[in-house]
Length: 287
Image 1: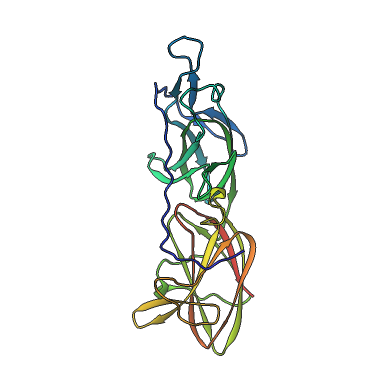
Image 2 (image 1 turned 45 degrees about the horizontal axis):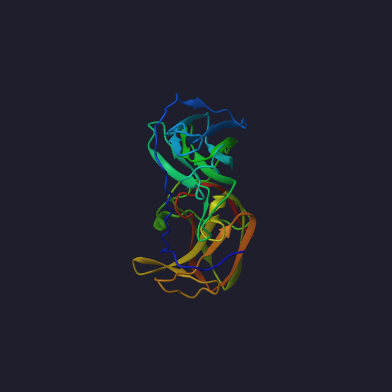
């Protein structure tokens, strides 16, 4: 299902963690499709009175991923309560797991957690994707739960060289499929030239996911633009320019999907993007 919503959305997730002693472990090497397990800490009887009264944090655990060629990873995560959580006198109804994707220098690229926006709920599992190049990456894990996770790597060769500037957008040819790796917080542009009024259908196969953003930010997004003076303005599915404050676009493009617009004669620019920290892989074809 695709919707039209405002681009200027902002959301925040606040997690509260009762801190205790931190224990740091060496980096753990992950292997493609192999599960690893860990936990964010432990509930303990600190004063030895027979009652669980403290949460002892494990700090941040780092999991190393070695990528041999360009492609995208799909990370699957399953969480469960820590032993003693129900007996903890401080209460942990908001127990959570947070993961961060880091580069080789352990600089944060993206962040994910198992909190469902607007539902005040923490899911037991999550899935997210990320476009990657050859190199070293880390997943940093922390929180107040047990977890197990794996990554699945899919290599992608011969991607189309999309550009980040609409003025340099390559032509999208009818009947030809383009392949793109959409990096975190980046956009791709393509150009369509119509010599007469035309019904345009763009078909997608998109692997751009963050399962915790259900109904909000999950999936790939697409927009049609036209040039007016020095500006590129969004148009709706009839080719009419829409408001800058509430521009028209298609969202939640996940898996096999398509968008359709009936457009007057002219030159249009296809903008492909994702919200926040989402990234991954897509194909697009002008049918």
